[in-house]
Length: 231
Image (spheres, one colour):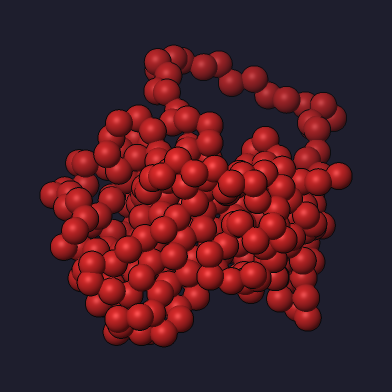
């Protein structure tokens, strides 16, 4: 696995955008080009960097905290920016702190967490769109997320969301975010299948699914998943 990651990193490095210094870090996490928006291709690159199959030097904008690595939370932040737009810098103002009495504080309910550490809000059937940002093809998608024998299983109920699998076993990154990193075969006929999903603030389930060929040059096929929960 480490050898494959090193090889993929070298290939992607040769075709990727090289940033010379951390001064290139964009204010909007995941905005590699600095054009004020996060595209699907940039999200795919962020997922590959989080998985270790692409070097951080291809897009420092994903390393929001400057610790030299891309975490799943930073990818989730980029997904939110892709869905809701990059934040606009607000003018600096002097705020007067107002203390809220404890009696007036509203408690935020904690969603149920079930083994292996996923929120019950993530479980169930979701439907919506799987859009290829490169080709513009927008297909209806329907997936189901369930805990089966202690593992999180994501099934492609429509047969349009995933290209290589009908179901994938996912790992929770946080209770409301999960990912898959699956390597099948090796050079020159293998591929890397990746899935990242997270709950957005508006209750939608959003993320990316991608297949990267282990070939020279590598070919990436990716879709953006934007889904709402069925009642």
